[in-house]
Image (cartoon, one colour):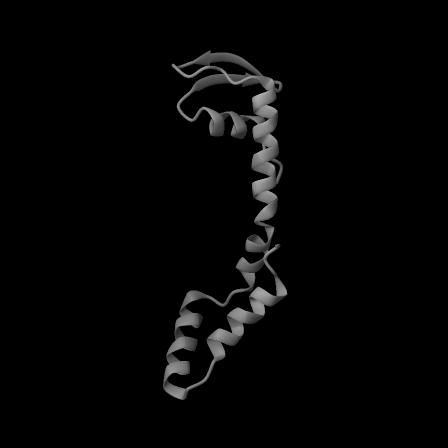
Length: 100
């Protein structure tokens, strides 16, 4: 995903009303001061870095067993003294490590 300028403006001035066309603010309303182009560019960079840093979470998500399956694993682990659930979760985390 690429962070959009509109997302950056909403992040910087969440209560503002504005018009946006062809990469430029065309109208500005509300009590908050309109952000400068430099502020918007910096926020786009910050939001993109934040998004990119969480790629491991998006990679892990489809690999986890469903919640009903996880609960079933936990139940049977308690009954049988096994570590099926812990092993499954550990594998997903090892296959998709969190960056340092």
